[in-house]
Image (cartoon, rainbow, N blue to C red; front, side, top):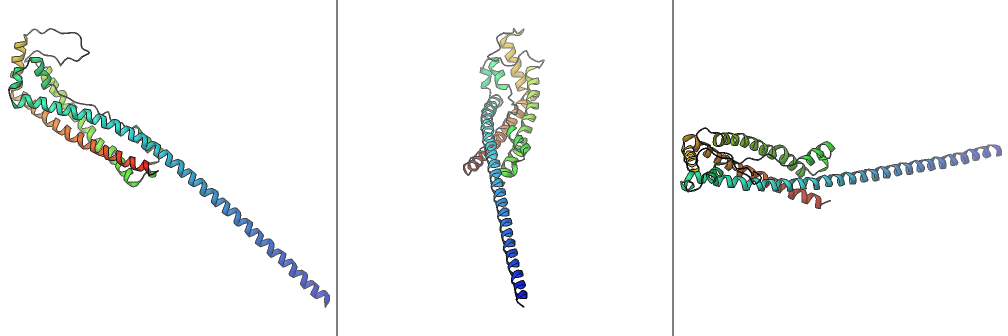
Length: 252
């Protein structure tokens, strides 16, 4: 009987040790899992922080592009308004006839501009795959500016260039009078004309007052109006996007 109780006691003692070891092992596993989760959380947080820093860097670069774009828009607006005023003077009254022939040529001379806006940063943002790191509002505004507004602006400039070159062919390569394109500061050589200044002026005025000449001027004025409207609209979108970017940067 004593041996039996000793055997039972020994088994209970062994079972108690096993239970303690099992609890200890469970505790160790739990600590390891918690440690791994904490490490993963820190790593994810750090990676997110680095991604946000990269996104902010791209946004700052994008803001510089937009500032450069705005300068170009201002230049274009000034030139379209000047061109509009010059062409309108010739079409609306006869005061231009008091000017010298070279001054009249400047008034009918057209203006067009290549698209010099910058999209390098936008392309880098897309290629870097960080567009999803931006706020939905910034994401939409950036895509709308480059894929819609700037695309319309570029299309207008190409259309305007095509028809401005047609105007130039009419005014400066016309067989009805002798002329040349307006001189620039870097053009030093003065080329002679066979016709006198008075004769050239008389022929140019006839060309301006012809149906074809008035049509060229009228359509140039309409393009200038389109240009002023399109550039103003695109510039306003760029300025709004700049404000959104400034707020996004300020919140990081």
